Image: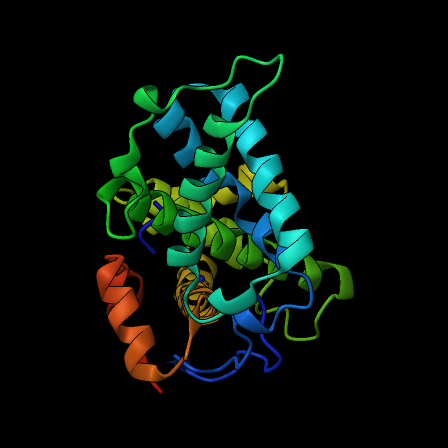
Length: 245
């Protein structure tokens, strides 16, 4: 289901995916703390994996956000966002270990420091899932925005519902999937409509996912985006689609 895409300034109206559609990168964010909060879920999950305790993870997050409020990205404002974040995770957990006071914080010997490596499989998987979930949410918002304004051609009124159901039930026929969509939405959906919406939804999702990847890189160019898509094992989302710089 999740193998099948942040908003950019240009609408998606072509039949191809542009890897460098957006020029917005993480280093240009006005608020470092605010931007990092977008990725709080994978950061917190990694901290819990490392420290083994949610309360310690939450205390470390406070340290990380406080630092970002004071210093921003500072000299670290370049490269890959996921590398910056994993360094922040390690630094904030070390700061928590070094703290003294009434609270019994996690001890250094209890932390799995190896998980805070930029290429650690656990972190890569958490990051990958985060980018895909952000792309799914963007696709869902796109669908509901279309419903609110009642687009004349109505070609995006069910792109999220149809794609999500199709990915969740890959072995079912278009007729059965259309019935599922109609039942969950309370509307109508034919097999031909479902096929059209799934096709369009895949294109939209892939573009949104490419935008997410691009915005996590600085410098950002088509080669860097392609390399990151491959490193995160996201190629399947672009399978069968025309991809250009």
